[in-house]
Image (cartoon, rainbow, N blue to C red; front, side):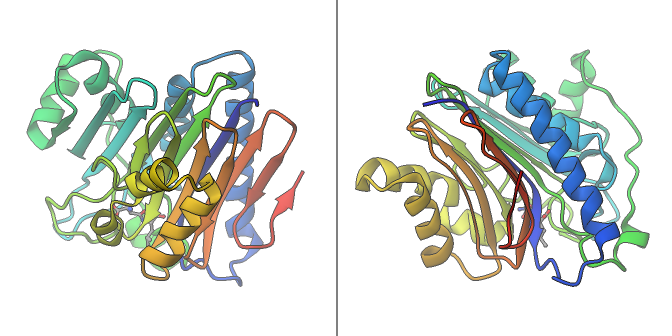
Length: 292
Ligand SMILES: CC(C)C[C@H](NC(=O)C[C@H](N)C(=O)O)C(=O)O
């Protein structure tokens, strides 16, 4: 059994007619980030560091609605959130309501590593940024006005899961939530067991309609079904996505300690990529996958 990595940058009703100039750059970005992740795993970086690295990389790209590309709430504010979790120790960190930090995932990591808490939000999280040095504050550019006219523009939540050859797992997700959400709303991403989860069995990162994901505790259910029912990772992920959540609401990337990787979705498409130590490399949006 070797290392595995899977990542997504959002999912939803991605039209099959999406012109190449809109989806090819996204595929290129996914390929680029996957290559960074593969290189990091090959050089024995821990899965926890790898998922943070990849999510940071995607947060820095203005086209996706997390980090630099964040979209607005109904109050015209930016409220980003992120979650990171280590499978073996089950340590985790979460942040919500960030308006100035580019790499929300790294702030979540600092909450995990340097506070006695798991979840900081709004003023408390912003004050914690002022206290920490490594986090870059910025004026977040939003592209809402131009992007609302385009079909894939509200899609871009970022997630990454990874496992090494010793079965150490980690997961991270970063988002600015649903476009035009109410100010103050918390989505599935930073809610433990909803949009993100990792334990000794598997690591899960979700994207989709947060309320549907929270209600079903999607990420925790995948892990629980594996553990208590003995199903394979793909069976567990497919069960939660296809039998427990409404169509069009949920997409997942998952890896397991037993050497499985799966990307399961009930949306029209999902911007996703995965690679394994035995040479599998895939970047895909709809069901027609491209293997390289
Ligand atoms: C149209 C939707 C499905 C796009 C999707 N959004 C999220 O994943 C938002 C996140 N799960 C939340 O609810 O806070 C995306 O960014 O790709």
